[in-house]
Length: 486
Ligand code: GLN
Image (cartoon, rainbow, N blue to C red):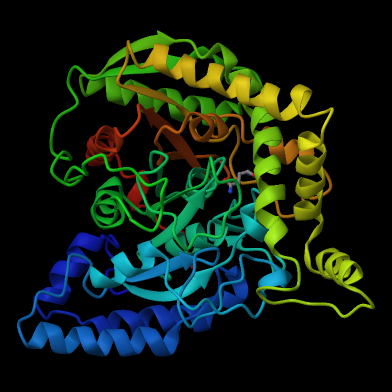
């Protein structure tokens, strides 16, 4: 990247606006990186070279003619390949959509373009965002730039690898049970899952509609704030998007966090937590205390059921959402003697193993006679998880803990054990079930040199507090400024 010092988006935009560098130079840098290193890291499924260069050329003339090129002028951005980009394949990591070219842009893509950002490529993901490692992608596994034996996380693993592998200073991910925060934690970057409804999902291929949320991934909380200023807000095209006014996320960053009440949840520091992660997270909380935050204990007694609840609710919604991929609309179609055989042949040969497992789990959990014990019961537990947060946020402003129990695991390590993979969503899934926002911040490294993430969770629509606290933490630490050796 051009801005090798810090990869800060703000300084990059300032240098572009002052003429010190140019949108074309930035795009060319990104493209060169992709050409040189994507075969190794597999952050991207496809690049957007021609469109990116055309947009950069337009921006250059806008800058020359004195037109305001926008707050993200010339910033190369990597977009998860489950988010629609007009005229450009959007696969959702699935063979089913291998050649699907959407006729429209997702709302966030439109917003980013209007702000001057340039989409340089579409990033790898677990098929339909189901997974934690991108090993479920139909096209390959993204590698962790800190150690290429390890996964970059998932499902937005390609987006995290695109930023930490220095292909682009920013990326967009989606998070249904942890898919922005877990790869951010594994790759040593900052990633925010906004409140449910804060960012439009028009053009996001639906996985579990009551949980899905789009959000930013970049090195720092400050860059996340800049991106949120562009991404957040109501969208007529997404009926679940909120009309809650959007604050200026950059404005809150400089405020000190003295007096902020931060809750520690004993259930989140319990068994199964790796010792190095525990220590780094405890140190980070100690630092927040030094900055004047008041640390209190909170209890989230139902969080122990979060994984079980999530793995009923999410597959139920997925089984319904994925019924649209039937070989009639969209792309892949296998030929067969009759319509029913065509449906089943198309789905059988174009969905991967994990997606098939989720569809089966979801269909079973919704079937008459079982739905009371499964889907309906899970919905009730979900309510209790939300109530725990409501009670906790009566006492504290934020809740701090680890993002993931471990650092990035080895490629192949959990491939034959889906349950082990599911259990690692323990700290992330409850924010989606409750709809609250949460951020992952780099807070240390293991002895083996792998990044560790601190998770902060906040009450509904309190993203500004997450970003402010993250920024204040990052003014005192340099974890987010470390870069992997290429
Ligand atoms: N790891 C979780 C899953 O497999 C979360 C995925 C996500 O947030 N998209 O479902």
